[in-house]
Every structure is written in C-alpha cells, then in structure tokens.
Image (cartoon, rainbow, N blue to C red; front, side, top):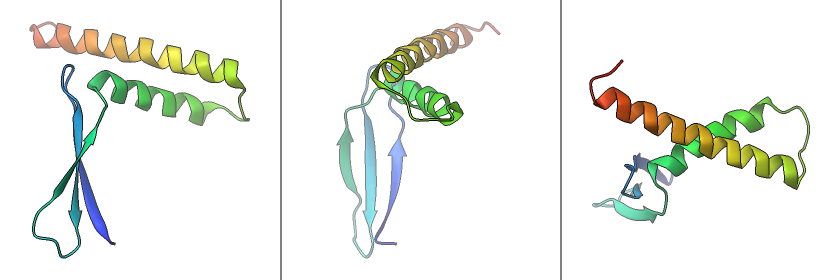
Length: 88
C-alpha cells in the first residue's frame, strides 16, 4: 500500500481530520476534511439507505434520501446528548 490513513472523528462543532501516513515518510500528513459529526452520521445513514435500493435512483429520490439522512443524524445527535446527560 502506498499509504495508510486514519480518520479522526469530528465532533458536533469541530471538523474531522484525515491523517495519511505516507509509506517511508517520517511524519503523518494531516488533510483537512470539512465534515462535522452530523455530516458523517448523515453519510452513514445515506450509505445504508442507498444500499437498500435495488435500482438506480433519480434526483428526487436522491434528494429525499439525503434529507432523511440528515434527519436521522439529528436524531442520533439528540440521543447522544440525552445519553451524555445520564439518561438511558
């Protein structure tokens, strides 16, 4: 492999960073990724949604899937906040 990569998860208010470890290089190279935790969660939800489809989708279905994915991400962040407050 020419390089190995490690993605540092973003937080709700901080963007993520992808660190690439070049083969034979002494130091990792940090690559800025303009993605929040909300974006990452929405991407994961969208990937699951798209994997469940059996055929190609048009623009409308893709847009609805993206909007729903952000709603799911928002619900995940709310559940995460509720759990951090000591609720289960």
